[in-house]
Amino acid sequence: MRRFLASISVAAMVLASPVAPAADRTVRLAVDNMYCDACPYIVKESLAKVPGVETVAVSFEEKNATVTYDDEKTTLDALTAATTEAGYPSRVIP
Image (cartoon, rainbow, N blue to C red; front, top):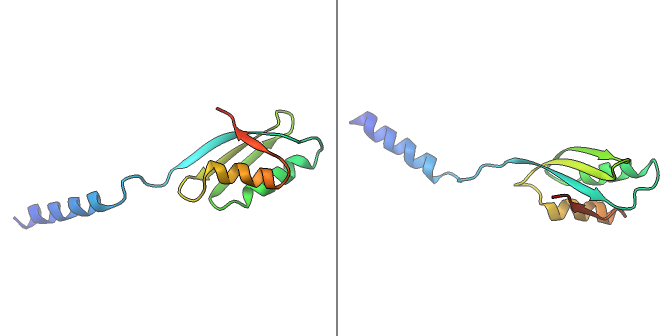
C-alpha cells in the first residue's frame, strides 16, 4: 500500500510540473544590408548578445544567419529586432 501511495504521489508531482520543457530551436534569417567583410561579424555579435542565443553562424555569401536559441529565453521577434537595430534588417526564412 505504501508503494502504491508513493507512486501516486510521484505521478502527481510529475503531472503538476510544467508541461513543455524548454527547447532549443534553430532558425535561418535572411539578412539585408550585408555589403562588406565586417557585416557578418556585426550581425553575429548583435545576435549573440540576445539572452538565450546559443550559437550563431553568418554567411556573407548567402546573406543569412543560422541561430540556435532557447525558446523560453528569447523569441524570433527579439532576434530580428537585434539585427535590425544593428542596421541589418532580417526576416525568418520559412
